[in-house]
Length: 205
Ligand SMILES: N[C@@H](CCC(=O)N[C@@H](CS)C(=O)NCC(=O)O)C(=O)O
Image (cartoon, rainbow, N blue to C red; front, side):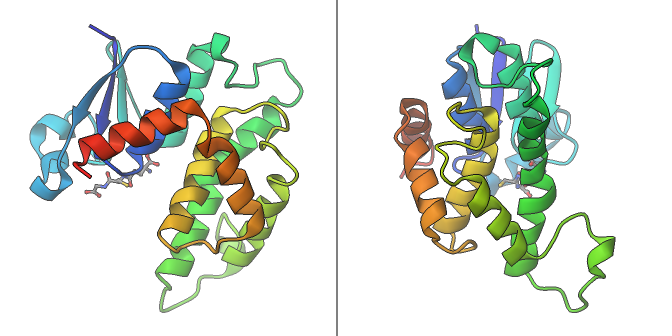
């Protein structure tokens, strides 16, 4: 029995972890939860993640939540797949920057745009910038590419790339050429295709 278990709602943010598991290529098990039936808010799953959010990844007896942490963890845990920038490499700092940028800058900026607040908080009180500035930074980062870290595809592309891909799919992010080209590059990866096919099958679509 694999000692990696993904708690997954298909499709959702946990699809990002599913893609990462396919990139890693180690055996894993999926525990599928139905949000429509509130399974993620039932005691069994709250014992795994008290927030009731997916993904959660169990590795042995350890539980990891937060999708960017899961991607970082898997990339470091399976270094032979070369999906990380190892400790001691000068560019690791930039790689970590992108892994944190996803949940702490890109996602909040997207949420600001999609769900405007009545009162705009002071820009200096926030840990991110306005949507347009954040998108300009990302467009520059993925050009000319092919990936955020140059030639090497890493876990940072799984995190940032998924955000851009889902953002465009749900019309939360404009279909800028830089983003379309970047997304097309990794959508051709076999692991990304396997993860999408699994998600479609799991969601019955
Ligand atoms: N900060 C979490 C967010 C995870 C998250 O929002 N997951 C959504 C799926 S897209 C979820 O579990 N929603 C169920 C709910 O809110 O009840 C992460 O980055 O992993």
